[in-house]
Every structure is written in C-alpha cells, then in structure tokens.
Amino acid sequence: SVSTEKSEDVDVQNSKRAVWFSWAIASLGTLMGNIDRITPILTMFYLMMYGGINLCCFLLAWVDSPGFRPQFKYFSRNIALLGFIWCLALALLISWPMALLAILLMYLIF
Figure 1 (tube, rainbow, N blue to C red):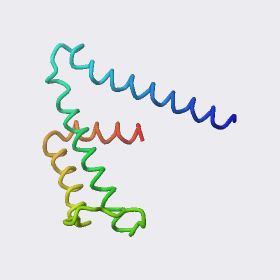
Figure 2 (figure 1 turned 90 degrees about the vertical axis):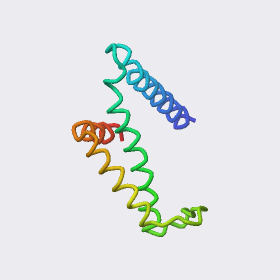
Figure 3 (figure 1 turned 45 degrees about the vertical axis):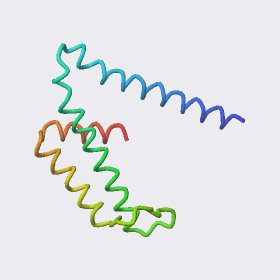
Figure 4 (figure 1 turned 135 degrees about the horizontal axis):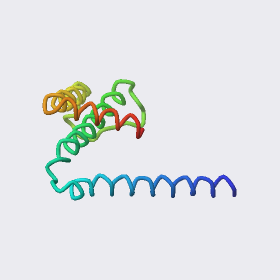
C-alpha cells in the first residue's frame, strides 16, 4: 500500500540521517586533530542518555503505567528520580556550557 511505502521511505531517511550524524560526531575529533576536544560533549551525551532513561523509568512508575513492570526487585521510582537528578547535576558540574549544548542538541533532535 501507499502508506506502507511512505513509512518505509521515512524510516530509510531517518536511518540515513542518523548514520551521517554519527559519522560527523565520530570524525570530528580526527578532523580537528585531537580527540580530546570532543570528549566533553560525548560525556554529556552519555550522561543525558542515562538521565533520560532514569527520567522515563520514574515517569512510567509515577503514572502507574500498566505496561511498565520492572523485574529488578530493588527498583524504586525515587531512586530513578535521584538518578535523573544526579546525571543532570554531574553534567552541569563537569562542564555547564557543554551540558547546555548537549541539552540543546537533544531538544533539537527529538
């Protein structure tokens, strides 16, 4: 059907965009001549990713989503919220300009 073909085209375009974006980030350090220049932003991306996972877990537990059933017996929504706050605080303490840049890029991508 036409809608399936359209959906597949969108998926292919999104995949290509993601590959080119990843390539640009990975090549940036090499092209700049020093990989240490991109480590702060990569650190922020990892912290934002872990913080985002913790925020999602907290929100799903908070609204009592029926599809969210964590199997980890020590899971607590308060710990998930603490993990989100901790990641955000660490990002801002490590390098607040890079943290703000990572938050901006995350906002633009999603």
